[in-house]
Amino acid sequence: MKNLIFGRAAIALLFVLMTLPGHSAEQAKKKLQIFILAGQSNMVGHANPHTIATLYQSEDANDKRLLQMVFKNGNGITKDALNEQLARAKKIDQLTGGISNEKIKAMSEGPEKKALEARVKKLKEEYEAFKKKILSAYVVSHQVYIASIADGNKGAGPLTIGYGGSRDKIGPELSFGLSMAQKMDAPILIIKTSWGGKSLNYNFRPPSAGPYTPNEKEKAAKNAADISKNASLNWRMMNEAVHNVLKDLKKHHPKYDAKVGHEMAGFVWFQGFNDQFSDEFRNNYRDNMVHFVKDIRKEYKTPNMPFVIGVLGTNMTKEGVDKNAVSVAQRKAAAAPEFKGNVVSVESYKVYDLEARKVYDSGWAKHFAQWCIVGSDRPYHYLGSGKFFVRLGDAFAGAMYGLIENQKDSGSGK
Image 1 (tube, one colour):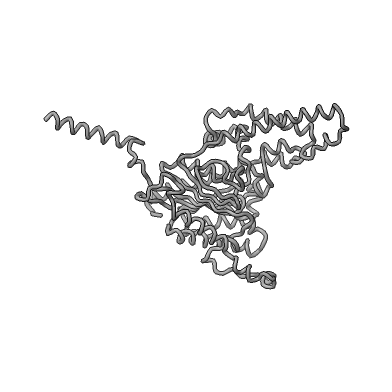
Image 2 (cartoon, helix red, strand yellow; image 1 turned 45 degrees about the horizontal axis):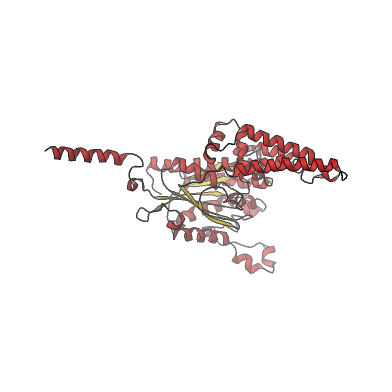
């Protein structure tokens, strides 16, 4: 009898232990959550990662949260250290005259010039050392993996920096994945496909939008046949890349379990710049976007796949963005009645890096060392501001998770 009682107690204790988080490997196994990120150059990402550290200047609670999310604990980077770097950069610019080094070049050869060059060299060495310190401080996720095409930069592995337009760039993928990891207790795989300078009306044209009709100039061109042939090319390339990853999920995420399976958890679209310059492209954007969402869901057999549309915000302010026909069309597509509760738009202008813009507008070439701390590209690439892209990816994740939770609450299946 005692053995029976002891056996029942042991079973009860085992049951309690198995319900504790992380106790059982089997209990911890959940479907691999797959998110597709796609678009043109601002999904590619052209921000140097060290520019993310400018978040240390901010007193905003959300920016402080983002710092904790993207940097390792005890990284040694502080607001004071960043301010020292900014002061160092300002001194470099004062001594050199900016990117052209005009002040040094204007000096006659001699001891005074050599002394100045030596001083500048020391400052630049300290400047570069701080940048390297930042680059060694980013987290590497063990929950989120990525398979990425960002123009010519193709890569796969644990999510960290380096999946932007080159191995020393980022886009919105970094903070999107890290933020989703904080929200979801499951393995996550990001599949990113992005190419610069592409339109929705032509390059990413979805099948249900119908065949592309060349204009008169295109019809008369020597490569008219190629123009028609290459319509929707990036739509095809995007889906080919995604399906190639789906064929071998274990290769792309070590925690994938074929018995448990995967889920097409959501899609993020960030594009629009190249559709601004043609009446046809602008005027058709809303309908093309609606077709795009529907065709994506059909392609991946997920009728209500959560879909986030990043609204083009290079005009910086609400007033400027409200006048942009493509931005307005993106909002209208997200608000289409048939997408209620499963498509949402995110305003990129709301997380624009206005501080970086001040440095850019002050004359980035004359203030080159200062500029390289806050930005790394032109305004059409949101200044290559890591601060912007980290904020944006997090905003995408917040919107995506809201859609996922909304579907759970409403009981609607994907």
